[in-house]
Length: 394
Image 1 (tube, rainbow, N blue to C red):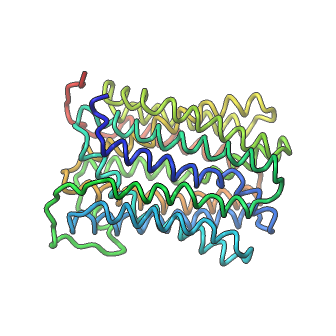
Image 2: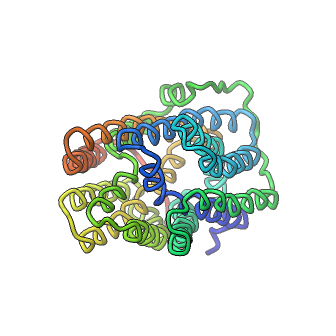
Image 3: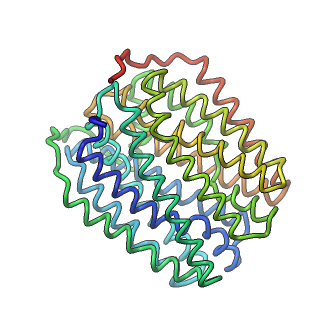
């Protein structure tokens, strides 16, 4: 794998360690929140607020990274902040404190993501972007499988001791922070004339190319119906009444996601990044329909198999597609803008889904999400977005 450089390896290992930390908490987060009195609407509001924090900060810090011509300081600070925020949730159960701790975790993600993805883009050619981002997602998502596996072990030996898990989770992410010091900053020309404000997510979208705007509109349309994964885990919990099934389903999903990311990244390089992304949206619609109508663990397992394929076909692919449509000097700004606007849509999606979940039914909430994904897929099929013509690397 000649396209996997030393820098790509280091960033991928760091992401693996960070996801071990984050994902050992994610499947138990709804269990912990329910135990301290959160309902679905509160969880939706919390996740939406956290995603909005990520969104606005991604645009701001992405533009700042391009303006200063620096990447590594943002990567290092972002991982550090996410690391120290996790044990904060274990200190108090006061809702405002939980909201603040979760937002701090997401702020760290907002600081680092655009710069990290810009580094990955710099390490790839147009013909290898899908595979480079796919490899990174593979490593990242392996961490997302290892983390919940550790959570299962801890729950088995220490049932109900959720706070202990939050304290343990700080260890792997801080090891990752240490690894950032093995990386070298690549030379980037600073662009002091480039403005970065809290509204950078909007200004870049306004000033960007038509192809970027058309792509962004399609992704935002989908994001308006793509609420937090917490709701899927809550659905399984309600149907099975078993914590181990909830975490097991999440581990299975992440294993599929990890194994499929590189092959689907290669498929994106070969058959087109946009086409691969659209297939992912159809998979998403099928997943939400299955989970909405299903009641057995067999159906849920099939749904999470497809869900892993959906994530592999969209997450890294969307970033590879975005960076292929903009100049190299704008990659952090472009990714920050897209991610920021997407997060704002996720805020609305999580809040609306939580309200529908509580006030109407879980089934209707999930079916609405499935329908929205189909609409976004059709839009992206008919809108004109010219991808660069490339030769597939051997």
